[in-house]
View 1: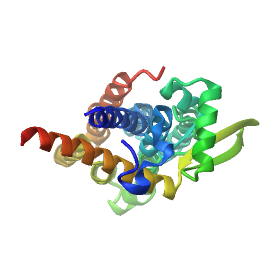
View 2: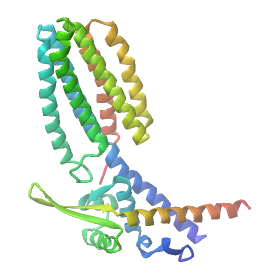
View 3: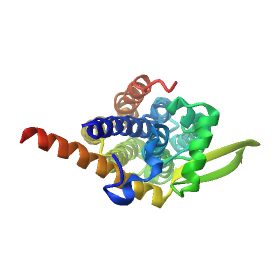
View 4: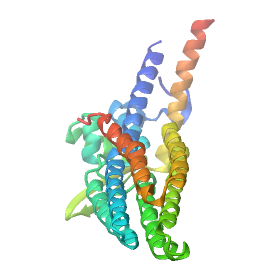
Length: 105
Length: 200
């Protein structure tokens, strides 16, 4: 599943955890680190690494704040990330559809 | 073939995670239970005040309960699964609905009773009809925007309450409205809470 459909197949979606993170944020709008950790089942270090990669790629935005004097870090999808995610899902749909079409012929 | 298998697996993962994300927004039965519980309390006490000959105090009662509900909402927001201390527009709609109750009943208590020539029973019919109609309207709007058919169906249930509220004497208006809250808001809220997916 590589390269033949242009920009949609960037490295960001080659990781299962990153796909899970992006899908969760697409569904919820935004979410905190602890919630993402619970849902993905990833370790702190691993999740932090993938979040940093997504942030560096401009796919997610990070907002740090204090609630009741405790630090809260909230993540949300950026417009660029949303666009890339939708393009990638469309690509996956085409791959599955093309295969089922081949099987019927 | 391998590509297709991988694509299929990824699509499955995406679907599961999207649903998990959405359920964190939609399945907040806590809001329905909170506001439903407060509304049942409000309607029960409204009936009591009317029975005791103090219908003018109903507006104050609802405003006071709305304040308590707002405090409860703050407490619930701190326990949200996503950890984000923000309300979605659907949550805001539920809160505003209750503020609407408070305003209608307060205005009803102050204005409608004199306008009805001191006939507080007629005024109460007006107050609780308006509250039921407002609830139906909000449920319809939220159901349409969330694409949740069951919320739209609840809207019709609320419309159906308008008939008995207008047919019986005004003192029974709060009781019918309370029954509506119990069956069309409190119970669905409990169902949503129980049906919530474990998050660990």
